[in-house]
Structures are given as C-alpha cells and as structure tokens.
Amino acid sequence: MNDCLFCKIIGGDIPSKKVYEDDTVFAFRDIAPQAPTHILVVPKVHIPDCNGITDENSDVVAHIFTVIPKIAAAEGLTNGYRVVSNCGSDAGQTVQHLHFHILGGKALALQMA
Ligand code: AMP
Ligand code: ZN
Image (cartoon, rainbow, N blue to C red; front, side, top):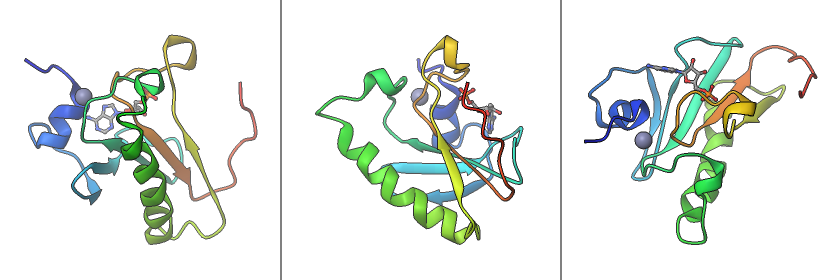
C-alpha cells in the first residue's frame, strides 16, 4: 500500500492541474501557490527526497532538469524563475516524494534561509 500523496497524484487517484507528463516525469500546479507561477515537477518513480538520489536513479533527475526549462518557457517565464527542492524537516519538506518547485512570474525575494 503506497500512501504517498504525489504517487497518488501521478496515478490519477487524486486530481491535479497537470502541466506536463512524459514516461518518467509528471508536473502539476501547486495547490497553495507561493508565486504567480508555482509548479511541482516530480519523478514518476518514488524517491523520498534528494538523499534518495543514487547512481541508479539519477538519470530521471537529469531528465527533470531538461524538462524544467521547457515548462518555464511554456509558462512564459522569460524573465527568470527559481527551482527549489526541500530535503528534510529543517528545509520544511512536507511531502516525502522528491519534487522540484518552479517559482516565477514576479521578482522573487532573495532570502535563502
Ligand atoms: P514541500 O513543502 O517542499 O514538501 O512542498 C510540498 C508542496 O506540495 C507544497 O508547496 C504544497 O502546497 C504542495 N501540495 C500539497 N498537496 C498538494 C496537492 N494535493 N496538489 C498540489 N500541490 C500540493
Ligand atoms: Zn511517491
């Protein structure tokens, strides 16, 4: 039994506003946007967080970083955007399935911590 929220979204068991999908990657709009454009990009394979990236599965992460600029372009983020991945409780990670936030559509605050 997989209780992972993002696995359920990928599987269509929980609805989402999909913006991109291919064989290995799924992207959808964040339910609580922190910027005018706030999209989550996730691998379809369940990886808990950045600490779960290995030599065996890092190809999907490399692929995600080729997908991110395509999504940003499709969203019209011509003036830039931020990519964020929270890893663990100190970073505020709330969903234990590796994901990359795309944030843009305005000049973002520079605070990093
Ligand atoms: P993080 O805090 O980095 O783990 O990010 C998890 C993100 O998932 C947060 O920005 C939430 O707003 C978002 N989120 C939680 N539930 C959903 C959902 N059902 N659909 C879309 N985004 C969600
Ligand atoms: Zn998952």
